Image 1 (cartoon, rainbow, N blue to C red):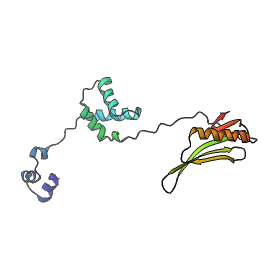
Image 2 (cartoon, rainbow, N blue to C red):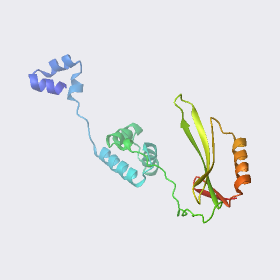
Image 3 (spheres, one colour):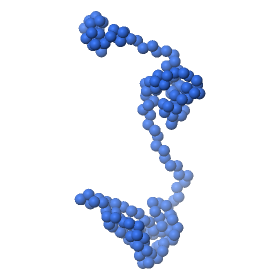
Image 4 (cartoon, rainbow, N blue to C red):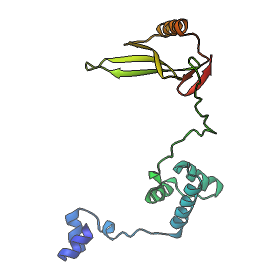
Length: 181
């Protein structure tokens, strides 16, 4: 700003420095860019492209311990930030499945049941939960238990009543995982 004021209004440097309340050495300061900064920047870019999970700390330790450079960590971090390497977003770690199993289509009643819990919110803010059991063959809802709370005793009682009424299924599906009974 001081340089622009000095150029636009044609004031002396000492007058502009007094107006801006800065020293004349601050006004005349020119940063010394040496070849080491370029070399550090080059290595930082190389390291972050080859090792995507490395942040500043690992890059600094590599340059200090492996390369043997004695540069100050503040200098390397300043260059790291100027290159905007600190703005990298970590990629999400995803689970890799080998080969998903195709969903088996049952050929008769009581071969496979699907069970799941669902929840919804009432107008007054209270949450209700439902326990659903569906026959996969004809998509018939075998039981639906609805309440504000579904303890395990109630779930086992509902399943026992259902088995007594319909018979035991060959398999039960929970969240797309088939469990043989």
